[in-house]
Length: 383
Image 1: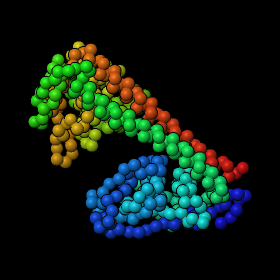
Image 2: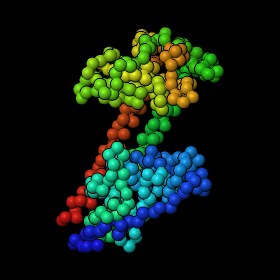
Image 3: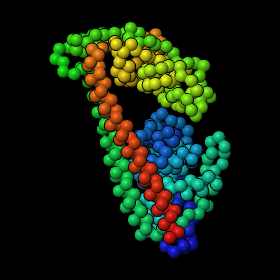
Image 4: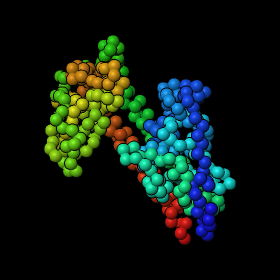
C-alpha cells in the first residue's frame, strides 16, 4: 500500500477477500434464497428479486448479509450488488468481503460500481463470447482509494442519493400496481354503472359487466393477421419505421407493413400474451399477431388495454408457450359504447403517462448517481 496524499494506492486483495464457501447440493443449503445472474440488474446495487434453491442444481456459493455479489461472467453488464440477507448464489459470481481495517465495508461496493473498476477489469478478463474474470487476476489490480474520513463523506452522499432513488422506485411500483387495479375495474365495471349482468367467459369462467355493454368476439371488431414472417432482426437499419417483435419495439425497418393505430400481440415465448400499441407506419415481425380494429366499433387503444394482460390468455403449448390465430380471433371482448371506451382509454392513458414520467425520473436519478460517484472516485483524488 502506497500513499498519494490523502489517497492510497492499494492492490485489490489488500482491501477485499474472495469468499469461496461452496454448496455442492443447493437443495441442502438450508436456505430458501437463491440469487442467479438473472436476478441482478446492471448498475443496480440492490437485489430486487430471487429464486429458490429447489429450482437449481450444481455447485453454488454461500453468502452472508453485507457481502458483495459480483457477476464475474459477462462482467461488462456491471452486476454488483450487496446482499441484504443470507443465501446462495450462482458460481458465475464472486462473493466478496471488505477487509475492514483497510476500507469501509460499504465503500468497497461503491468502488466496484465506478467506471475505473470496470475499465481495469477489462484488462484481466478472458474469453470473447462470454468474457469472465478470475479472482487471481482481479486481486492484483491496483486502485487509489480515499482516506476513511473521505470514504465516510462519499458514503453519506451516496445514502442520500440512494434514498431518493428508493423513494422514486417505490412510487413507480405503487403507480404500476394502481394501474393494474384501476384497469381491471374500468374494463369490467366501467364508469358510473349500477346494474350488471353475468356472461360466460373463457375457460369455463363467468364475469360480470354492465348491462349496457355488449360482448363481441375479436374477429368481429378487427382485422387480425400474423406479423410478417419474412422480416427478421437482420433486416434492421438505423432509419425507417418502428418495428415490433415478440419482445417489444426492437428497432427500425426500411418499409412499413401497417399504417395507422394497431395492437401487436406477442404470440410465443415468455412474453406471450403481452401487447404493444403501435401508431403511424410500422412493421411487426414473426411470432406476433396484428390487430387493427374498426374504430367505429372498438378503439384500438381500448383493445390494447384489455388484451395486454397475460393472465387473460390460456396459453397453448406444454413447452414453448404460444397463442394461435384462432384463439385470438375468438377472444371475447366486453364492449362499452364508443364514448365510454374513450373515457376509459383517457383515464388509463393518463396513468400510463405518469408511469412514463416516473420511469424517466428514476433513470435520470441513476445517471446522476453514477456521474457523482465517478466524479468522487476519479477526479477528487488528483486534487
